[in-house]
Length: 268
Image 1 (tube, rainbow, N blue to C red):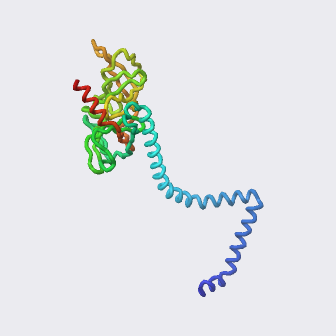
Image 2: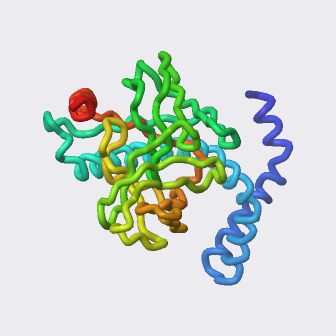
Image 3: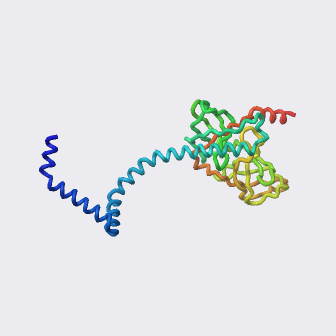
């Protein structure tokens, strides 16, 4: 303490000058518009790097919080939309649920592509559940471990999806012909559907995997094979399959009942 007092006494004149100089600048800035503007500009130039560093530091935390909030909002909206479009399947009035997940591995260049997501049995995921995004369908759960799940990608030649024209409810079979990761083929749509380029394609809901009315894509080309009464439609996907991050696993509340009903019909 004594050293501090001695230092102040030795530099008293300098400290007094700095104090008076600072006060004079403050008074000038308060009463003169130009000087006030110049002082503020100088202060901003000096302090800007510190504010930018502080903003970048706290933004990383806020970004994570905003991402989690966005996922939760998407989860809620998807659940409401799916339940609204599939009232007939809610046998026990239990609404559809979606389980948020992150894609940790994805392939698009093979003929039989797969994904891996970071949710599993502990999160309520089971085999044969559908995987979607806010833009469309992604694939079907193939195997499940405690914390991760393997997914058959939509870009897999062995996978076929029940799909339909949104405008007319004409059904067809959607599959990937391995030509492009951005498009698929919808076959077996009758000519009576009067399909035109731009028509929307959605899930048909005739399975216990994907509910009805989940977006898939739009018709980009139409073709009728020779001597055939059915279209072969090229469908451009809404979802970019090479750019997947946040996805949602669909929990079908009446899956077991629907499967039993489908099996009974098939066995008749």
